Amino acid sequence: MNEIQINLPLSVFQEWAIATTRYRMTRCGHMSFSGVGDVKRYWTMFTSRTRKVIQNDIEQFLQDYDHWKQDEDLSLFYNAWQNLLAWIKTQKHQPTPHQSYVELPIISQEKCNAKQN
Image 1: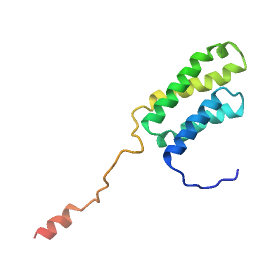
Image 2: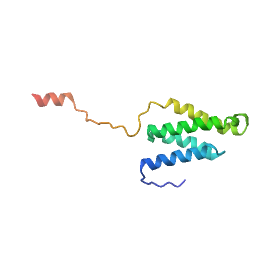
Image 3: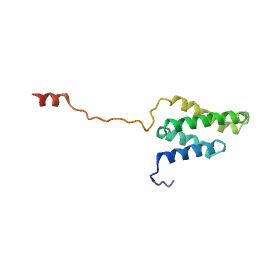
């Protein structure tokens, strides 16, 4: 697969992720399965708002397409999204990428004591 690196605002990336997830949910085949994989792959990059939107969209899809469970072929796709929803619910307590963290250097206590003497 060819890959390129691009810079784009996180908000644009998240809008694309939401839109493509919505599109892929109702598709059958590779596109649906790769959609599930992409949500998992990029989950930690999404803000809590984007995570909630995707979760709500999947829940709505599962309600609207409940009849897919009865079909031998369609149930594969339905189950993939259902399993993703279960996985998402285990990921709820991860921090969003916009939380600020302060990185402090580790200073040896021996060096501090030596400077005081």
